[in-house]
Amino acid sequence: MVGPSAWIFGAAGAFIGAAAAWLVSQGNPGNMGLCIACFLRDIVGFFGGAKANMGAVAYIRPEIVGLVLGATAASLLTKEFRPRGGSSVLLRFVLGFIFMTAALIFLGCTVRAWLRLGGGDLNALWGVLGIAVGASVGALLLRSGFNLGRARRLPAPLGWLGAGVAVVLLVLAVLAASGSAPAGFTVTKAKAFATGTTPPAVFLKGSDGKPAQVLKPAGATLAPDGSIVAADGTLIATSDAVAKAKPQPGGKRAPLAVSLIAGLAIGVVAQRSRFCSVGGIRDVVLVRRFDLLFGVIGLLGGAFVVNLALGQFNPGFANQPVAHTDALGNFAAMAVAGLAAVMLGGCPFRQVVMSGEGDADAFAAVLGMAAGAFVAHWQGIASSPKGLSPLGWPALAVMAVVLVVIALVNRERPA
Image 1: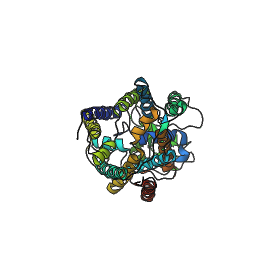
Image 2: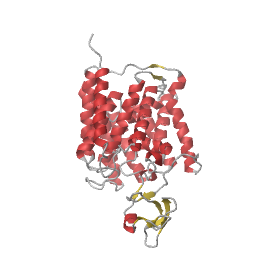
Image 3: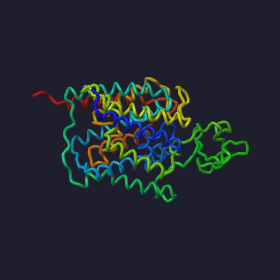
Image 4: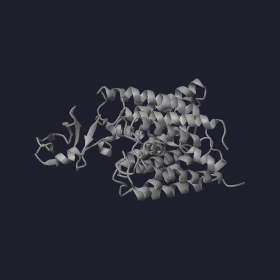
């Protein structure tokens, strides 16, 4: 069944997809104009830094800040801001943790899976198929009685947790952009490159495209032949390795103001439309309604059209930005992520938006995602463009078992 709201979801999805693709043209990583998992991970990297293996992904993404504040503003204007929560808070934290870990094994959230496909990354086909399977299993669990309980009205201060944290992050982002970030935080240098050597050498390019300044390791310098040598003269990276160096993900970003304004606009649209990247599949299986599914169709279409218009559409499996070609790994990771999202009651995009509307349960899920990002990088669970890490498959297996246990324990029995 398709209702009139289908076109609202479709238009909202198209706007979000188009805006995300446009943000890539403004400096964000390829096929990553908007990724809740990746961008939350980058924010955690700002606090976790190199000690948590996050030095290359350390940047407060203004899009996340804008998404929350845009949702807050829209919900206040429409009198839909309601402090609420208190339903299985700890489990929501765990589900958020699982979602994030699985997403970083895939290298993208359920929104980025569609955006990757809209940019021509055919590896995302396996991820989208995984989302469909995971969300369908989640819908069947809901039909069989899975329930995390009802939210209740909470004191007003708890409803402002999401917006309050977003404001703090915005202040820190502005300070970091001005070079005044407090000591102890990490910011990946804009447009920084890193070699694939061990340890990697990080450097900036000059206006002529050639290496101009070595950032790491400390004391390393450029040799006349274009290689990078340590302070003691030890060769760190050959000139060939320097030539093949790739941009650090945290160093690829649109200007702060552009990112913030885009995030605010997307936040308003998302709050008003109730867009969700897994809800459409859930509703098709659960109640045979197709309205929400138009949202992801619009997301895919908007991204495809803008990518094509801007010359960013690059179809194929190989050499895709921030992606790997492990088909089974992509499928399994997104199946786990899709199941966790449906059990949460909405994808991570929706959780971030709801945290701006006063939903403390959604805020707990977002905190779980942040914790998952930290652990995934600290413990080496997150994938790389080379493929899954050695801990990737064991982590997916453990998370799948945990999801099954949560589903069984929280299943309402018929009276």
